[in-house]
Amino acid sequence: MRLNVGHMYNKAIGSSHEVPVDIDEIVVDDLSIQALHSVVRLSRTREGILLQVKTGAKVLTSCVRCLKEIYLPVETEFEELYQFMTRHREEEDLILPNDGYLDLGPLFREYLILATPIKRLCDSNCQGLCVVCGADLNLTTCEHQSSEGSQSVTFDQETH
Image (cartoon, rainbow, N blue to C red):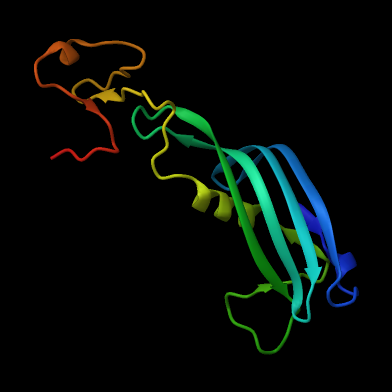
């Protein structure tokens, strides 16, 4: 997911440009993303180029109750400053590459993961898994569920 920002290097400070980013499907490291729709605003600053991003996508994750894989809609906004190469910089600073292309994949991955809810459910009525045999109780019933006092596994509840 590379974006050409080289045209902004010689622009006047304060100049800005918006770029739509629409991708049907992409895998960034370990994260599968579908229907990525973003607007990236590039602003030339004294230090470099400021990226301001509004994005929405569906990220592949799993339900915390039944472990079924689901694409969950996620929206987030973030900004990052890519700095021109200088002598005085911190190790964590993002540096503008000489070729003018930014790889936005890792940045989008990080912010989409941070925006993904911890309690991810395939459905608000998800029944989870049987604690004894592991059956998906959304699809079937098992003999353990008819016994008195048995419960399904729901990883969002405390079990001691």
